[in-house]
Amino acid sequence: MHPNGTVERICAATEEVFSTMLGMEVQAGDPYVETTASPSSEGVVALIGLAGQWAGTASLTCSAPFACRIASQMLMMQAPAVDGEVLDAVAEVANMVVGNVKTGLEQELGPMGMSIPTIIFGKNFSARSAGSEEWLTVPFACEGERVDVEVCLIPNRGGRPVPGTSYALQGIACNNPAARRS
Image 1: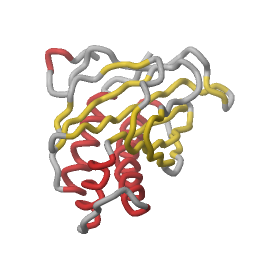
Image 2: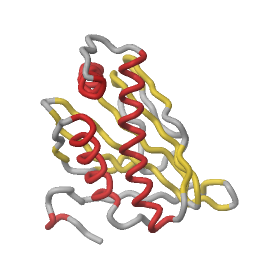
Image 3: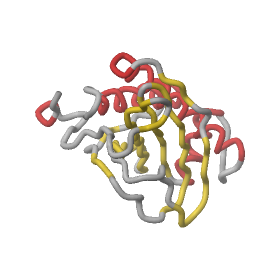
Image 4: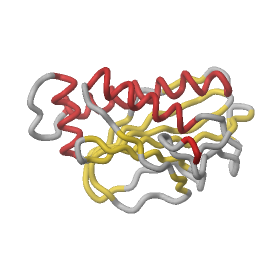
């Protein structure tokens, strides 16, 4: 079970925000689905909750050096190390990307609320929602760095998510029309 065009919405939102707000071009890689927590990593993760008839989480993940690059572009200043301004800039980029994806999903899933971003920075950590739901991950390449945009949504019944029901899209590439399916 999944909303049609989710990968395309993620690609369009990410490309638009990076181009318009940061003057940076991103290239989407092949999307994939994860059902387990990613191995320990380091960098910056912005998590945003989504709630409505469907509920879940979306995230934007990048390395610490790329988080500094995002902040430098957004704030038009040098950001040599991760600090509060860098974390705020990454949170704002995630907020714009996820907000655009949410707006597109609302056409199929109904109105959704969105939490303020929670930002995590460090080394040797994993970030995941509880449970074994499927996460749709779209990796992007930008200036030799990787940025992941991930979404996990499940139907929400009576104010509670329904365990074991999620959506994810497998085998769909943003820039490969032959690989898309409805």
